[in-house]
Amino acid sequence: MSSRKKTFYEDQYASFSVVESIPCVKVKLSGFPKGSDHYQYVQTKLVETIRDQANNYCRLHLLTDNTEAGVVLDEDMTYYKCNIIPAIEEAGVRYHAIVLPQNFFATVIKSQTALVNRKLKVAYFDTVTRASKWLKKQ
Image (tube, rainbow, N blue to C red; front, side, top):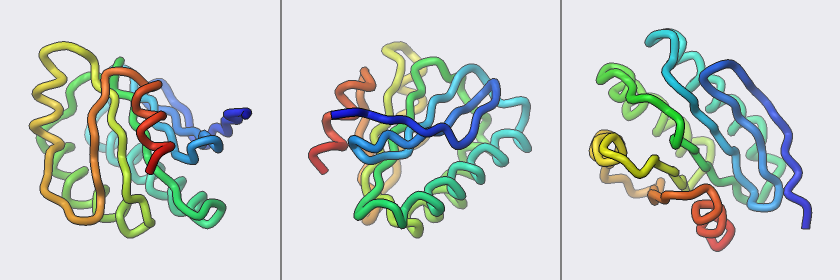
């Protein structure tokens, strides 16, 4: 089975592609955004990509690879929680696998992104392979 990837967005901080074998939008983050404007732009592009792709699949998941990502600012986390998560849910995503680095920051990120939510089920993993396997079962 091929796991063809189509890249929809790419810059030095983020890239999004669709992994058709799952199917999911896969986000790879590296380092830090240039600032809050850049962070918000990238997240808005992510929502657009999900909306554009959602019609091509009976269900579409989200996989975020944070293994090389830096910690984002509190105001960016607030923006993500208040604007991006509701938009992701509205676009139909119900399962979000987040891959975290095995270090101190992982605990911080988990506590920052953990939220009680009825629609979006979030699970944390230490490898992209484990995250992909979980999403395939959903």
